[in-house]
Length: 469
Image (cartoon, rainbow, N blue to C red; front, top):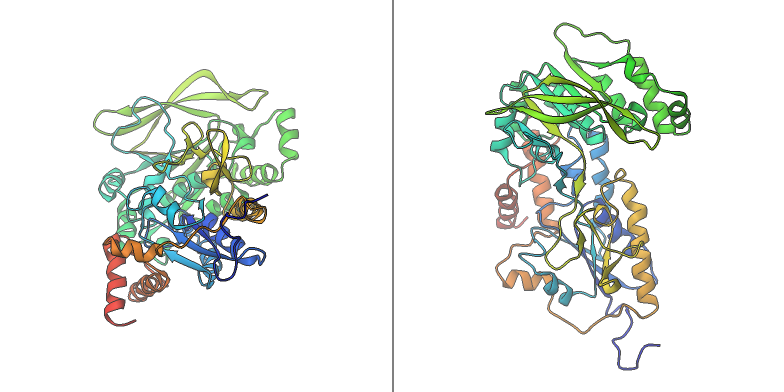
């Protein structure tokens, strides 16, 4: 039972104030779940360090996936809800301390994803020409923090590329590298990205998997798109598709694996074609070191086998694959916000299983997590919807039983930020950015061209404000 002197429960005239940190799919789904219910009055601030919403839908899904990227049209409807306020261009943990944020709201839901790449931990990994997929993806999607100089230097003169990993991101990277300039031209990539990729004389892309095709984590939809390259031929070693009876039975029980194997077996009859980029899918291959002095020149790989537990084990058979570029795509890790407990091994926020953040082993009142920072970098965009709903259900249960209460009035978060000299980007400001990108795209015969510099994004906001929108 709650004491009589405790803060009141949420009501229409003093709703539960919730800050969602991260305006990607998980954050927007959390805001949507909070505002779709009517039992607990809420007001949601959707806070993001970028001036733009949509997270990995904007800066993760490859630009040659227009249908998948169109999911942001659906996400946008949640931003338009009167109880949701987008607050972009605010970095929680630095520009706005976590304790300061918590003082302005009654609850915080952390949904800021997993932005760090996992390392291979092998010799030569830091050579020029060796990139993390996170860096390459940030560059070709126009992320404001992309390291243009490093990525573009790595791509210069590349004829043979090796992509390490067999998830959807690895296939995205391989496909983008194998695309022609004509295929990339209609996308919303920044113009400098299209120009650099068009100038890279890529002849061969090899995608490496440590285990077999039955254990690959890419989806069949993503796989099939490799077969639609205008000037690329997918090559698969038929020997990699010869599975033992036990592996074949396991694959038969997994719909995704069954479909993947059918596609791969169809491609195993392909032969290299003159004038077309070769995109090789190679399994049972573990990288053991990257070769080179001034930059990458090759990858030494060990042939593997898969044991009864599904693990890759070395066979002692080695070979060298020539490579001018190596891109590792072996997973992501979440980054800790100052003051937020994050497991260094898993890169996830410590929580109780349904999203309540744990501090010293006990639920921390008013703190929750959803998305990749909660469960790790698994699943496709849609998986975040169920995950966010689970977390929001825990939050609403806490509000219903009095664990979570509305505290006394504090200054409005946006007004506080503006008083400190910050430049928070609100929904109308984002609309100005959106309009500027569409106008830039139209000038080049496209639907949109992504503005890739933070200052360019903010300039669009200021110009719209100066015109009185």
